[in-house]
Length: 285
Image (cartoon, rainbow, N blue to C red; front, side):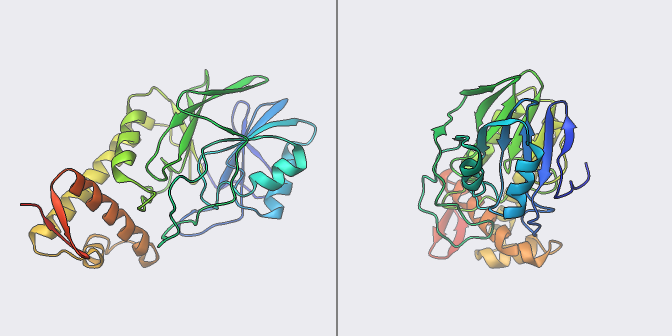
């Protein structure tokens, strides 16, 4: 699936279209993908950043149809801020994830949080939102953020995965709101589902979901082993671990990598495998 144009919606599945926000970056890839579900009544998933041109593109793509709901997978500022001008223009309710539960104002390596997000309805695990010709079921997937949800389009095998599973990169897990333990549990939750297609907020569609999730789990376990190896070698500083482990990665992404390494270390500490010594880490025991 190539990058969508910014000015018009493209159909990606029967009754599902996408619009690409013009916010490319090292963390958003080509930009945030907004999904439009339905032919008469429309659900908008991840309306994106508060860019006037993107909101106008959503309104143009849905002209003549009623927007029944505006859904947000989580509250990073590349996902939820456009919900407010879109709601103001259409009267549609904002539905989906809860507001940010943890006071996380930094340091950030990925998108900042949308602290002004105020949903009209919060969906919990398994709760359904219905419109004419469609139904969306919430799948709780905390980890990337504490409030992250995916949405399953009932009867289709399509799962809108937000940032939990992306088609171009692994997900940033940045403490304290990001939690590696919960992220891995959420991957396990998806691994036992029978979805046939993932539509993420960034990057191409994933048409082999279970294999893709297994690969993500394997990648995280590999990172764990690398961290343990660095600690066994006597290296306890996160910055040095990142320099060794991510030498082939764009340096602009190293701050995000450092946050993920920290998330792994916190998870390993919970499991009794490592301990913190001020700003350095060591093997437990």
